Image 1 (cartoon, rainbow, N blue to C red):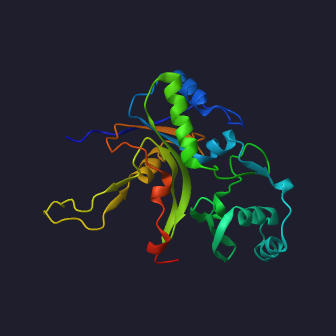
Image 2 (cartoon, rainbow, N blue to C red):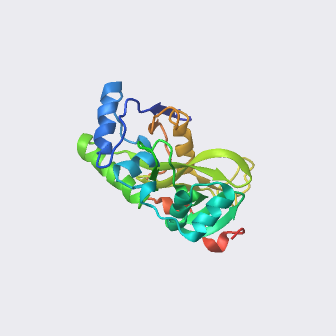
Image 3 (cartoon, rainbow, N blue to C red):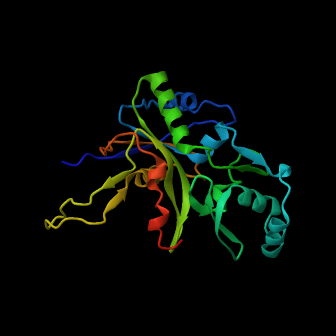
Length: 251
């Protein structure tokens, strides 16, 4: 018998500011909703509120663009300060073309603009960076929740990424705690009894995308709870979802 999965938005959260305690804000909002946490819930949190709470923001007024950033910005009518910040936050430039910058961040993520965003930042011309360590952020939030209410939940820190050869954005797990991010089905039989050879499911990404159905940038709902998920629990890492360089056919 399959267990149904239910997804709840966490509503009523205030604008998150540097120094805010996300566990406290979460539990207060859930109390107002009449929706207490349960053991084995999966809490999906938007990267942006994690970064804002941790103070991982940069005013564009503090950025002095380099000649490279100025040249690129002038060519494609972009903000040179933003371009400079993207270059600074990148380990490697994957592609710069037609006004788009795809980079490998210091964390190893391949994404547009090093994951930097100006939307929903709380202030004009304030850039929000990715968390310094999304796994650490997830662990801290999970531990804080357990200390405050005694519930054992998994936590995913998620962000919106584009995908090569596919239009539109989807959610991916940057960091996590209390969850195995991958389900390795290699060697398992399919319905006809033939063993699977390459099937590895990105469960953490699927959970992040599922929660986004009730969250999202426009709705101003940065947290969601997935209840009923029966996948393997453990102490995985968001880094487990990154493809090794020697297996990257497009590098």
